[in-house]
Amino acid sequence: MAVVQMRHLRTIERIFLLFGICFAAGSGFCQHVGDAGSTSLFVPGAVWPDTDGMPINAHGGGILFHEGVYYWYGEFKAGKTYLPDCNKSWGGTRVDVVGISCYSSTNLNDWKNEGIVLPAVVDDPKSDLDTSKAVERPKVIYNRKTKEFVMWMHVDIASYAAARCGVAVSEKPTGPFKYRGSFRPNAGVWPINVTDADKQPSETNALARDFAGGQMARDMTVFVDDDAKAYLFYSSEENPTMHVSLLTDDYLRPAAKYSRIFVGRLMEAPAVFKHGGKYYVIASGCSAWAPNAARSAVADNIFGPWTELGNPCTGEDVDKTFHSQSTFVLPLQGRANSLIFMADRWNQWDLPDSRYVWLPLEFADDGKPVLRWKDQWSFDTVPQLGASDASKPHHGI
Ligand code: GAL
Image (cartoon, rainbow, N blue to C red; front, side, top):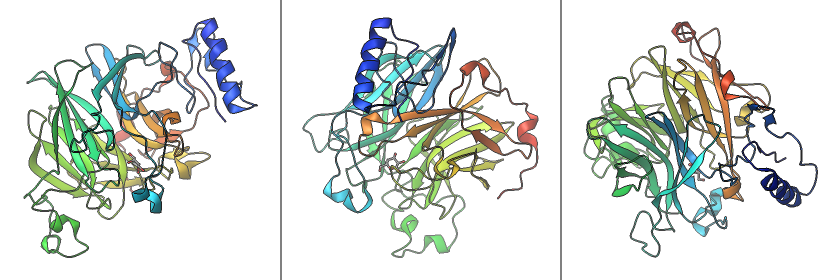
């Protein structure tokens, strides 16, 4: 059932929006409005209007905090959702690429549309950004040395067989981003934890198969550590295994140092964060747009070993991550140790109507990350976790 947040809208816009959505949804819809007097409430899974009253359109995204402003980058999904023949066997629906959107906010409630900061290219099938391609999971990081905003993304053909990383740069957080091209990472480089067996080419060994040309890279994220070193996490080797790769100091290329993690575990949609001096990943399994049970893991060293901590969700629908898939974990600025888990609730047959599930991230007494469903909540109430929350022993799963 659809619900809507209307706190940003003027009366006349509220009437139009309610009329439109009630009409579209049939009946039984007009409840659960995310506004409790002066306190703005976030309603996970609801339509979330921007400051113009239009639904925020930034899927598979991530957030950069820069000079007092949060910038949310994501896939702008519009137009008809269709199932190309090449994806029929696994239900890989798509919309044609429009580009990467950006929204800005100082309070996480009110998001201003900053437009499409990396637009698709029309009628140029050779371009990675052609409307016929896939441009997904954009993440932007700021390089203090070069003063450049660097966007990493997964670029692909409609069947997802290309599995490449794309990079774009901008002088301003709101773009325009200049596309620098794509590649498969770590060509000619073995991972730091490679074994002799890993190096033997065989039909089932994608690592060795792709050694010369570069490793497959699908769902990805980037993470900047306290020492300003940046790391790229990507689902690789046809998806069963993830890689974590150091980036060069300018954040534009892999730096020829990477490791294989979660070997054979089929994890994607990685969201990486640091808490209490340890590294954490929350990720999904691989089931295309359909939700599955989230995974979590912790490590003292970003290259591993990583210890899996199980599904962080508690309560109903935990086997489906509350009908969503991870995309990012956002540290709140000005409130130490407050983290928000961001996820996408994909609508496979109407991708532009996909929604956002954001939840405060907590830690259990045993030191594992915990996500609890909330019908609605306020950004003021995100718990401040003590450093001790993450310094407890982890026993794994
Ligand atoms: C998901 C992935 C999404 C998108 C989708 C296509 O597994 O996380 O980013 O690629 O598959 O079906």
